[in-house]
Image (cartoon, rainbow, N blue to C red; front, side, top):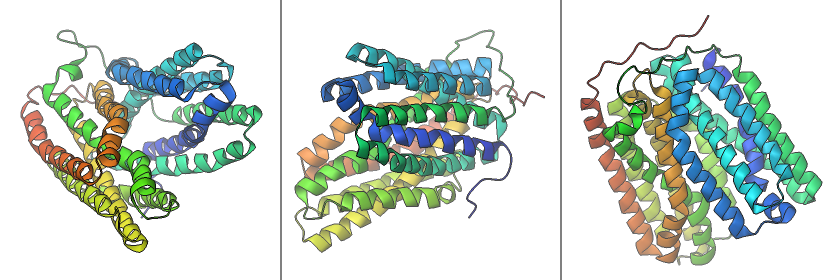
Length: 408
């Protein structure tokens, strides 16, 4: 199995993603401590600020994707990364909740533009039959980059000084700029002229696509199972030792890195991607049942069920991710990949916003019945996707515009 895609645009995208996600790992691990221990914000203020930022990112996803189509995805991505780097560096000047809100909201706008431009850049620089495979490489690379960043952030956490946190943030900001420099090596994709008639944001008027986006976004709540619900469940409802939490996280990361590209095979077509989504719902539902069964059992049995559940979950995660890429690329007109990829990312942002409340209320608050209800929900969501994709495919009546070509 290749560790990197073939030389060309896909490899450049992968290298830029690796650089950028090392910085993301740095920030994810240390952000809460920096904002509370160094800036002096309360945990509630940090939570509210992150929620507001997520909402801004959700609302801006499709419009910024539209701009990527109009201005050209490479230039938009580079500009978004440069802006993101400057805004990340600006965090060292934050001294109040209001300033945190302002910088956070602006960063969310830059991240939204980055997401939409990235999808359009992949669509414009990689052949259609390689787009899903490229996204799979990028996701595996993302896990590697975040893991490396998380390890490096440990030095700042150990020091627990403002100087250490500032150095970490400026390093994270630098990764934005380095990634932007890498992406300038990609061929420029010609901007697509705005339509002369009809609505501009066609993705937001595409009801079948929006229905898929909502289903996929609700399905993405499963990421909260491993990161939020399961640690609380293990500590409060099982006899498994707490260190198992780290072990399950490591298993998830390794499986994604090693098998995401392989799991994406067959999802290049709409039919194959829809089937993968159905399988994902089944696997994640099985994981919920296994997690529920671990409660109250002896330590060895509980650990065995938790590991089995984590493996079932990551298999569902691999299929769900690959299915989403195949469907979002397959349903997007060639002249509107930016806004369609931006609209697709709205679903993930929605799932990320509501997952903490849903998974903790059901899995942790309700216990075994809550886990089973979550499993039934994921099973239903996965089962609904093929029908919605079929509906969307039947509505692709308008011939797409010619595919953008690289600018000489």
